Image 1 (cartoon, rainbow, N blue to C red):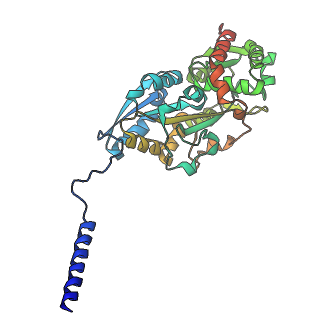
Image 2 (image 1 turned 60 degrees about the vertical axis):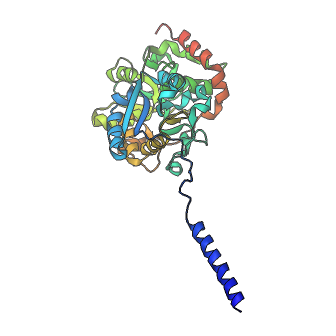
Length: 352
């Protein structure tokens, strides 16, 4: 009996020792760390509009304060320069901000971006989400239509057919698609509607009605507001945005063409070589907060990508989800033909 008691006691002691070792972690065990940096700095690339619109002042200061970090901002002149920087300056960027969706076909080298599904993914407007891996994440969008000065133009064209009418001789402002997202959207819109074999004929028919081919949306919009031109193809939300800025003084109105519209969105992307991926992810989520999305409305004149964001009264007149032609123009076709299309545009409107 004593022998059995001693035997059982030995087994219990052994089990107790094993349980004690199992509950304690070896002191020297190494745990894998995420691919991140201890730096409290994030490097952003954006267009000059990010600053001139006032969006920088309303976003960056609050982000730095909340995350106790430093934002290093590098600005590029326009959308084309920003897009080029993704190839040339990739090592010095954590997040690129302000990439137009219409430039995305030239960024098919997708390894430049890291996929990131934002926290607000379920609240994003599905119209402006182009790919399910979320390498390019929209934060604002609008639709192409015709903007016009209602004080100078009583009857605005309702279609591309009417836009070619002689009564609009020398009245239209265009935006150059080589550098501007809105200009590129106009080019894509016309090709989606008239086809890659018919769009040049349509643009040539428009040429007599074009006063000038402007370098930026701001310049073209100034021309329409001042009366230098009476109308321009552009983002229809700019009419509501200008009304919010000037209230009753604004004379800018819009038409959605009977042939359909074209979706335009602006996106941000985390670079695959980002030195601070966690802070970059935090910035994406910060941009999609309702507070930041309100600033996208008031500073850029775009619909917010986050559907939960309350719209100001003027935006209630702007239709959501009109008939869109984007699906009629495949990314592969855009990538293969962009250079040729831009050359054709330059040739047709070179005298302007």
